[in-house]
Amino acid sequence: MRVAITGASGFIGTALRESLRRDGHEVLRLVRGKARAKDEVGWDPEAGDVDSAALVGTDAVVHLAGAPLGPRRWTAEHKRRIRLSRTRGTRTLAEALAAMDSPPPRMLSASAVGFYGDTGSVVVDESAPRGSGFLSEVVADWEAATEPAAEAGVSVAHTRTGVVLSTDGGLMGTVLPLFRLGLGGRLGSGRQYMSWIAETDEIGAMRFLLERPDLTGPFNLTAPEPVTNAEYTRMLAAALRRPAPFTVPAGALRLALGGFADEAALVSQRVVPARLREAGYTFRDPALVPALAALLR
Image (cartoon, rainbow, N blue to C red):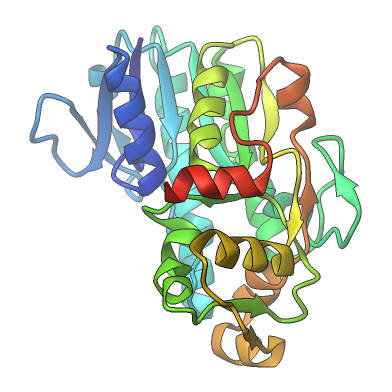
């Protein structure tokens, strides 16, 4: 396959790129500004420009680019950046693909379980309605921005990803140094559910969907067994053979991080990958304890 990737320098994009190349696939990286290497394609999402001529003959586009959610305080400016980086960038790419004489037949567009809002202890799958809050609104607009490509005949799937566990980035990569020092702890009450997925399955599921253009619409990229934050904290500490005695009070998180605390750190989301499993994907790391052991090996 010949696959083009936006956000190819992020930790998920890097892992996907390396996985594809190991298996002999050709990977193009969409980079801001002018292309400077033979595997680069220039694009400017703010200006609405994509070098679509360089995408001729491409089998699929994976769209991962977007401003990081945090951990940081959600100021009005940062919330604007989060929204625009996803909606404007996605629409720019979708419209460029739609304008091609022969667009790539497949598009995977990153999305998030933030679509569901706070689900408490209720188990939800792709049939659940949109929740409430800033992130759920952003995700809905983000997914809708792919419509020009879908209307042009491109097969589009949305990867609603949970918390990706990796030693190279994301939540786990951020807190791992603290846990290794025995300074880990739960967030708030710890009763909030966390929909996680091991990096192996994040990449595996994306590879699975790339090869199945008949599968369109939203797919939850989460492990089948969500856990609470307290369970995650205990299991990670046990895997590292370190204590995790601390608690970060919810009030302190809200004071430091504003809306990010309630919609990312303290939100409870018990999301399961119903459509992915129905389509035949087999998880390599479905349970947290062995997944952590494999990651930390």
